[in-house]
Image 1 (tube, rainbow, N blue to C red):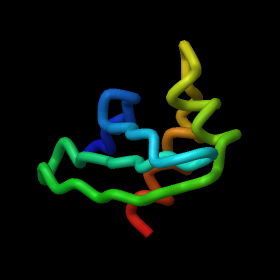
Image 2: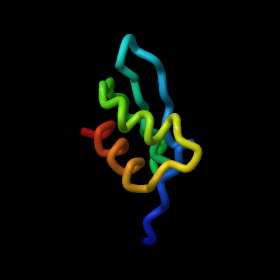
Image 3: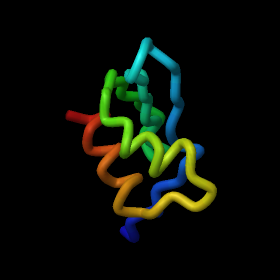
Image 4: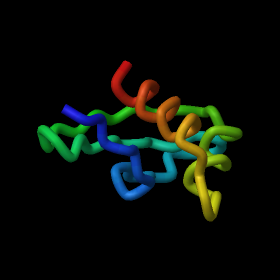
Length: 67
């Protein structure tokens, strides 16, 4: 089975206070969703606030959500 690319549309972002975001990752294969609150603003800027987020940044955000 070929691995699917991670897209920004797989994530949901919700502001959770000063310097915090609640991030959700929805798996397109299983439909399962994981939520995590993070204060990693450089990663949020590199993904949510970017026009073309890098795959490594999306993979890191996915790892944070699933941990």
